[in-house]
Image (cartoon, rainbow, N blue to C red; front, side, top):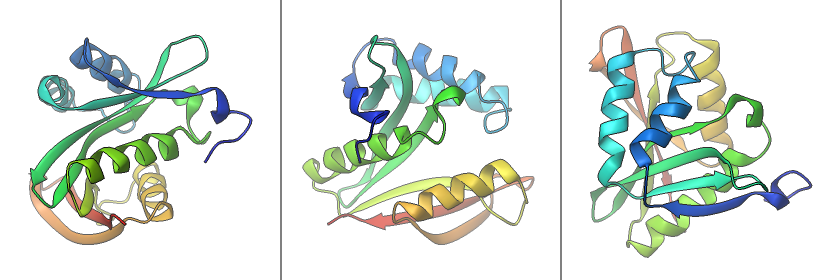
Length: 161
């Protein structure tokens, strides 16, 4: 999905500074990533995972997605973040299109993502769930205590074609 804005965006694999990139972007998004321990865990977790980044025309990283092979059939969008000024400009679509290509190359049949369940109302996560649904993800199961009782986890999945 390329348009006037996204035609100048480049998606590539990042092999250096993954933890730093993850931390920098997540810390700038406290509405979604307001728990310091969670940011620490994500920053540590991405170090050994494939990470794709979106770069603007000046080569600045404006968003990322890290992927985790969960089973031979399923790849998880482990964590993603897009700088606030780039929200709603197609960057998420581009990152997920690239993530799907990587998942297919790995032989996966499904792409999954975890997010906050709607049993805890939050306007930011409502927008997140709506975005995931708009690109083909469907809600699969709620895990009420996977993260914590205050943060119920929704597993969403998309069949890769």
